[in-house]
Image (tube, rainbow, N blue to C red; front, side, top):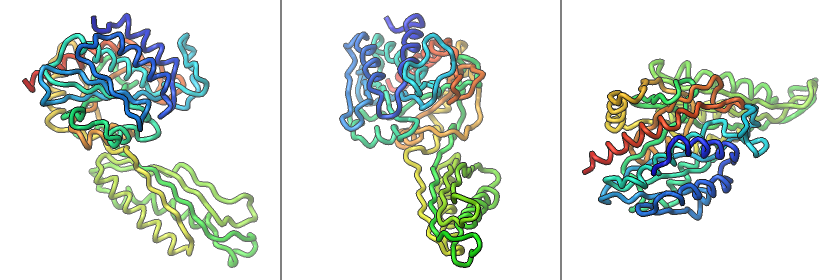
Length: 384
């Protein structure tokens, strides 16, 4: 029998106790494999990836093999010290499932167990993906070569839990759900010197301050007001003491945009401004713009229209049309390669994602399983 709430909640609680950081999810992987091994194996094929050794791929063989539907869950935790006081709190000091990936995995196992019992019309590919939080796991999975001709989905689905939505609610929208991100790292090098002789030095506090000010004009003067973008510089370090001119500075920040085109536009403006500041202040600026796999999560129009219509007409689903969020998600890379839809699953917590106090409502697990087993069966039947 497919996993029910009575089995899924203890699975969630166990996963919550063993969070691991990206690319080190070995205990998590072993536990997931132990649960999958208890499912009927008639339709299942398990595949590991040597170059991404904590990932798991599971194929459910359908009645025909000319179409594949993908479902992805992330499996890593965060470097957060848990403060929930739960009896099943993290056993790994300094690490916590503060982003709800334990919920994600539990729902994925519930869906997988359903199709292990009920052969789908087409092949289904379940991806248990590491390193969403810190190392572009989606990009690594795609580029590993594991998604070859027999494993590459024709369409793909995933969700993220949302503390602001009622437990079990499904939220989605046409277009972009999550922003694309890009890290900014700028190292400025000039010449240090005595505060009394500024003409003999090249002050990187001044150059760095000018760079910060100029980068903050990008959104206000280079981005269409109808569109969206964010440039935030959260770290600026320079100097050691008040009477010494700083010869070096480090500035770090992030870009957020709702389309990949806008993200690249902002990146181009950052490079141009950096070149100008280096010239104007006669200094060297080593700039690193690192996007990795964190592209915008841009939902496919046709698939998402079908998803939203199904959820709106399912009497068991509390569907809420949501606004885009400026948070990042490495599913953005996968959905740029494979058409699909990402959605929210409400977990009704007073604390935000990444909070050391975040506790999702476990009633969301079975609600998510039921909504998606119904919808994925519907998608399968469309291919018959």
